Structure formats: C-alpha cells, structure tokens
Amino acid sequence: LNRKTYYDNLKRIAKKDKYAEVKDLIKDIYYNEGQGTYGYRPIWAALRDKGVKLAIETVRKLMRSIGLKTELYHKRTAKYSSYKGTVGKVADNLLQQH
Image (cartoon, rainbow, N blue to C red; front, side, top):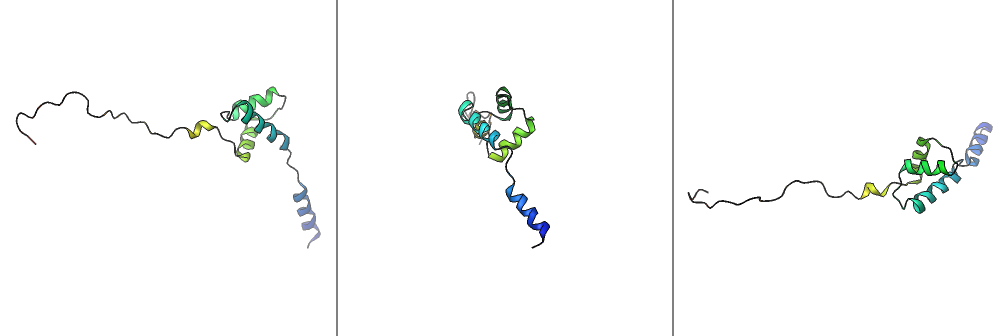
C-alpha cells in the first residue's frame, strides 16, 4: 500500500461531521417545536433565534441529508375535479329520439 494512499484513507476515516450538533438541534426543532410541519425557512429562523448562524442553503442541505421533509407535502392526495354530475332538470323525450 502506497504511503500517500494510506494517510489519505486514514484522514478520510478520521473525518468528523462538523454539523453533528446542528443536526441534533434541527431534529429537536423539527419534532418538538414544529411537530413535523416546519420547512427549512422556519427551522433556519429558529436556529437563528437560538444563536446558530448558518446560511439558509446549509440548513436545506442538512435537512435533506437527515431526511426531514415537511408533512404538508404528503397530505395532498386527491386531484381537483370540477365535475358535479347531472345539473338541472332533464326534459322528457317527447319526440322519441334516442
């Protein structure tokens, strides 16, 4: 095994997640404050209120990596239909057409 490859692999294995604490805080806000309805914007605002300064894109990426989605996306199941059935009165077939 090449020396450089060994140390590159060692460095890659020893790499720590620098957002581990922030991810725990995001989960806490998502489940406790938002009850699963907070998206990335309210989470970003709550993090800012708690003194954690992150870019809004970073919060989006962290939420995506954790697998958190707003529950509102899952509620829309029926497609809109304006069909109301037979409306009004149907006249009698006096001429005996079809």
